[in-house]
Amino acid sequence: MKLLSILGASFAMIQSGMAGESALTTTWHPLDGLGSGKIQIVPVACHHWYAHGGSTAVGLMNLVNVPPTDNPKEATEDLNLASVCKVRFSTSDLGDPRAPLEVKMDVTGFAVPRRHDHPREDVIRACIECLRRCLPEKLSKTPLTVKGADGDREWIGAIVKEFNGHDRSKVFFMPET
Image (cartoon, rainbow, N blue to C red; front, side, top):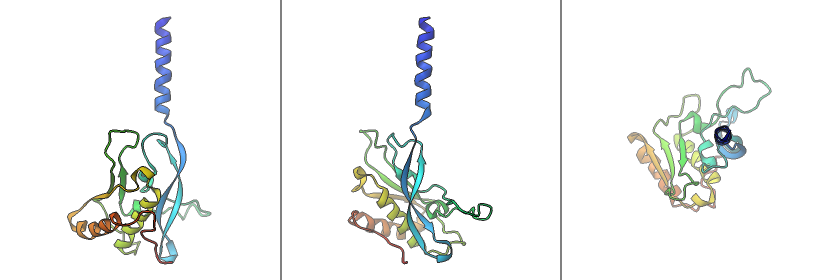
C-alpha cells in the first residue's frame, strides 16, 4: 500500500512537470506589409508554452506568423521577416540565477527571399527594434552579440554596434510609412 502511495505521488509530480505552464504572451514581429511594400513592427499574441519559467518573449520573435484572414485558402504566407529571413534571437535563462546575462542574434542562415524586396539593413534593424521592445527589464542594458556568416559580419556588426550604443528606452528603428 505504501508503494502504491509513493508511485501515485510520483506519477502526479511527473504529470504536473510535463504539463508546462503555458500562457498567452506578447512579443513583437517585423511583418512584411504585403502590398504596401513597407515593414510593419507589430505586437503579436503568442501561446508561450514556458511563459512561467526562465524563458522570455524574445525566443518567440522568429515564429511563423500567418495572420488570421477572411481568405484562408489563399493567404497562407508567413509574414514574419525574422522567420522568413532566418534571424534568430535568444537570451540567457532568467530562471537560473547563475546564468550570465546574454542576448544573442544568430544570422547564420540570413537571407532576404526574392519575394520580399526590403533592404537587408532594414530587415535587421526592424528585427532588432522588435528585440528592443520585448526585452525584459533585467536584460535591457545587456549588449547584443551576433553570430553570423563571415560575409555578413561586417555590415551586421556595424548595426549591432550602433544598437549597443543606443538608449534602449528610445526607438532604434521605425520603418518609413
